[in-house]
Length: 258
Image (cartoon, rainbow, N blue to C red; front, top):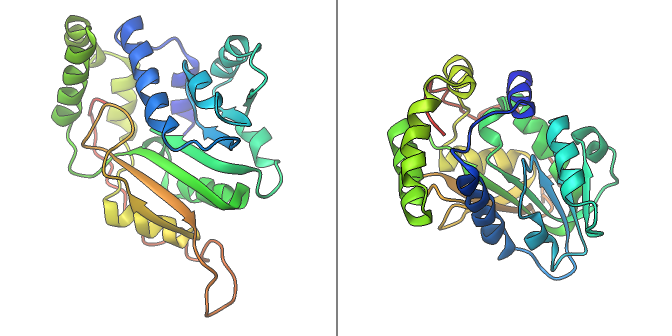
C-alpha cells in the first residue's frame, strides 16, 4: 500500500474541482449518518479528507478519524481542532487502543487499495476494537464486473446532478495522464464479489450482509454491514478463523478509473 499512501500524501487531482470534492464528502457523510446512533463511539478508518465529518460527529459521543497519510492528518487536525467530539489519529495510534473501543467502525473506499493480507489484518483489528453489539460498515467494495466505463458513467451522473458535469468530463480525460492512472495501471485494485466479501468477513469472525444501496455516488459498488458472529458451538469462542487469509479471491484489473 506504500505507493498509494504516497499518492494520497501528494497534491493529487482525484477530484475534478472544489464542488466535486465538497459534494462527494457530503454525500458519503450523509449516507453514513443514517447508521449512527446517539452517543456512539465511531471510528472512520482511512477517512481521507472527511470534509463533512462534523455531520457524523454531531449525534455521536466521539468520532475518531484515522488516516495513514500524514498530510491529510495535519489538514484534518486543522479543520476540526475546535470540535471536541472529533479526534484525529494515525493507524499506529488506533492499533494501540483497547478492546471494544468503538460502537461503529467505518471503512469506506479503502479495501480496493489493500492487499488480501492487509485487508485480513484490518478486519482482525476491527474485530478486536468493536464493542460486543457494535457494527462494522465496509463501503465502496469494488466487484470484479465493474468496469472503468461503469465507474465513469456513475461519476458523470453524479456530476450532472450536482452541477459540475463539464469539469467531470475534463477531469476524466486528465485522469488518463495522472499519477492515479499510473498507479492503477501498475498495481490494479483488489476486487471482491458479494460472496467473497461475506466469506472474508465470516473468516474474520463477523456475520455480514450486503446493503441494498452503496454508500456514495457509485451504485455498482457495494456496502456491507457486519457484526460479531455468535459464539461457535464447536469451540465456544468467537473471533477470526486461523484460515482468515485463505479463500478470498481478488481480481486485479488494470487501468481503470475510480
